[in-house]
Amino acid sequence: MKTFLRLALPLALLIAAPLHAQTTLGVKGGINIANVDVSEVDLPDVLDSKTGFVGGAFVNLTLGSLFALQPELLYSQKGFKASEGPLEATLGTNYIEIPVLLKAQFKLAMLRPAIYAGPVLSMETGCNLDIIGVSVDCDDDEGFVDRKKSEWGAVFGANLDFFLGPVMLLLDARYQLGLTNLADVPDSDESVKNRVWQIMAGVGFTL
Image (cartoon, rainbow, N blue to C red):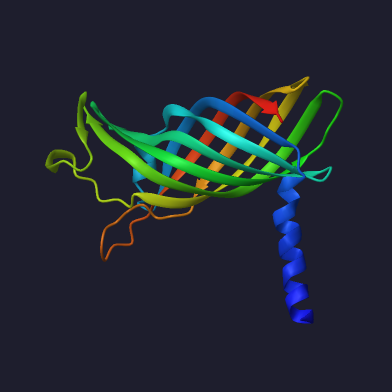
């Protein structure tokens, strides 16, 4: 019985905490500045960043006076550009992402700056390869790209919330570090990992 109580009490507190938390629901959107980190020594010289859209919904659950838990559901456009001489190619990948962020929030009158970190799961929903203005699906014979279609990453960032009564306006800047090697090539040491800067603005409503 004592062992059961020692296990059950922390679990009950963990489940009950969100029920008593202040909850904010919101949406946000902005831009991705995406690129990749590669293992091939000569490739970084021909790679360049690609901009895309990022946006979706979030739930902010305050846990006490300092911390908050914020799960999100985002649509995110990543990829990269490559050019050598007159030739230019763009790889565009679209993902559904689920970040789960642990935040440290500091309330200052109408403002609430915060810093945060957490894991993110990304699942590919589409991929296109654009070569000299001709776009093909990455899975077509003409543009076949061996790759993993899901990845884990880590998110680090900061945001500023501005409160107008029950309405919250926010600015958010973060860096997403891909941890999964997306190159799906057997018997190869090739490594390709996403690297993304994300800048977003949004609005939330406190319940």
